[in-house]
Length: 100
Image 1: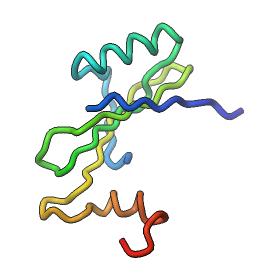
Image 2: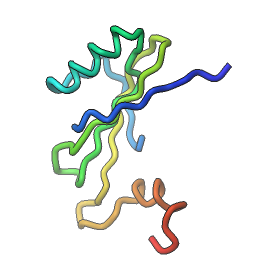
Image 3: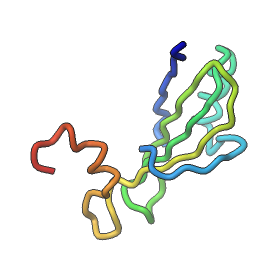
């Protein structure tokens, strides 16, 4: 039985993970979580995408499902500290680029 997941980009890979109790970093997140709850959806992954490790997140990707589960926090750094594409980012895009 394959369960459907909904991914929502709220502007704010799964590389690192830690379990957290709730996801709420601002009005965009609260609105998405409120709308999802009204539809019977639960946030199971919240991934913060950063340009570099020392920069604030550019956006947050959220995965929702109809089955309640603890939310997993994750993050993805697009660039390493030297400004080169991170290993995780390269891994995600390797199938789409011939020379990356």
